[in-house]
Length: 118
View (cartoon, rainbow, N blue to C red):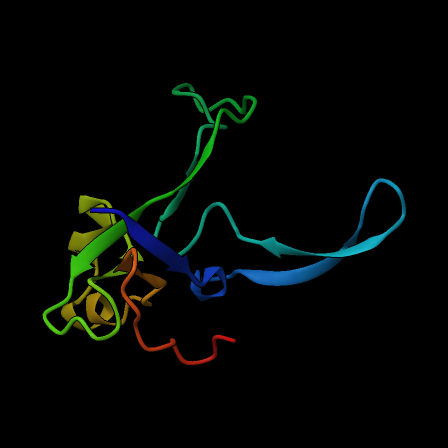
């Protein structure tokens, strides 16, 4: 089955919109997301095994898709994925407070709009 996926990047801890000047002098809005964030969700390949910095090979956003019992808002919700070590260090309450970043809706199905969407 194919899905439409919506992710609110501003729900990532530390993410913000900044206005920056482009190479040709125009001002544009950019989303800025810290690579080392609270959940360890965004990972990069800029540090080698020896601890030395090296060129970025990729920056990844790790997510979990949890199937919903009630399908009115979508079939799955998207949460920041956590490493086993991070999961073990958080309390049950902290795990429940992980932000819902978005949802998956099967193509052709209409769901209620998320709060704040236009």
